[in-house]
Image (cartoon, rainbow, N blue to C red; front, side):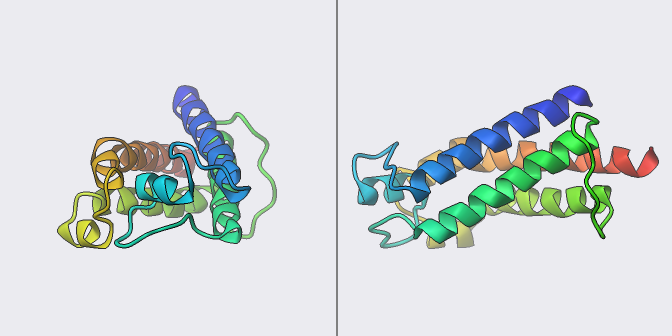
Length: 146
């Protein structure tokens, strides 16, 4: 379980750093805001990246996910929370699994049809969400038994 927790923690922190980069004006993997948005946002008619507060909110959420995974794996100290850590893990798992499944649904594709996002979503983004969600689910269920 330590490997699963560490992998989710590392990937979540890397994704958090990427979202922070976008929040401060970064445009990779594009060459400008529009091409970046077409690659990573993909909503119909998108012409620029989301505002910085939105990207920073995702950054914070991903840092929290990293902490949840590392704590469930015994790699970080728990901090007090009114919600049991395994329940937080299950909630995060549901978000990631839901996002991963959505990427393969026709309704999602109608919302986010822009290329190259649509292609990257099916190849990379949705599978990554499914892997992270599955890992969080495993860690959380294990957390209820210990």
